[in-house]
Image (cartoon, rainbow, N blue to C red):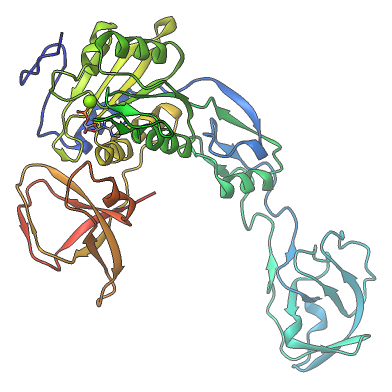
Length: 423
Ligand code: AMP
Ligand code: MG
């Protein structure tokens, strides 16, 4: 039986079409349960994993005084005369040498970047400021105390927090963990996310298209973006628009995954069965419909999973651009919250619109645009399509999403608007 869609429906929860993405997230984010299982993962395999605990610094980094330059290490007491000043060479320290045990007498020590400073030296002169004949070095200027030395703790002091819990580990963070000397890092279990494409018209790429059919592109969009975001994806077989088939697929997702992201079938048509299937399975719809374009019919709820766990349900619309925008702005923040990554609102940057905009006010709109440098240094945004949420080519050609506030019905060419970078 198709789900009816009255304005306020007890089964579907609030249907506030005026609701913004920020309001929706503010309501839903605090309630997202975070994946609890923590494992130790080798640093080399931890890309994209979410750090489960703060990592603090045991020993200062660097742990010893190091030269920041190729040059000569000097003692304060040898630098009484004005430059140029000639000193005998009394030793050599390369990176990896201990810097200990040099003869304690007047003179300069040949030193290289990263090498430990001899204990009696307090400054380094760069080799470009010196000339040498092999046995002695002439300083053409006199460096100050502390010059060109990296002190212990210069990078990270003992006790400091090097990496905070909730960091999604990329190259920079893994390099930092390695600098701390860690072979393994504590990470949360990867979020398991099922992807379900619904639609009787869908055919998998590689198969012949029968009349009336289209290729399933959302499956690839969703699975790829979710994997890029660091989640494990369960790529469910595509289902036709049939309530029992949709319900069976959602059941499978809820049995084994933390979340399910579906596309299609969440609007008001007779063939839109996804919300109804969620309710049939004993799940809930916490929210349906947003004041955004594209993506208005997006649904968020939960399905009962094993052991009293709840599987997050994200019912995205069918149109590919709506899938992209709602996944980026609603789905990924909710999934990241469950994965243990704290929410950070997307950073927007200002752009000027190339052409005037006339539109019906009421919904916040995300428009695919290209960017080019403008005369005043700000990027100029030019739309890539005609505005249909089905026009995938507009998104493919875009550099950014222009954000038009809900109340805007007209803006002249050159007006500043915020934009979001595309991944
Ligand atoms: P729906 O939300 O199910 O009414 O779908 C809206 C539009 O998106 C329809 O034109 C569908 O054919 C299209 N659509 C739905 N699912 C997909 C998909 N997986 N890949 C490409 N287009 C889709
Ligand atoms: Mg459909």
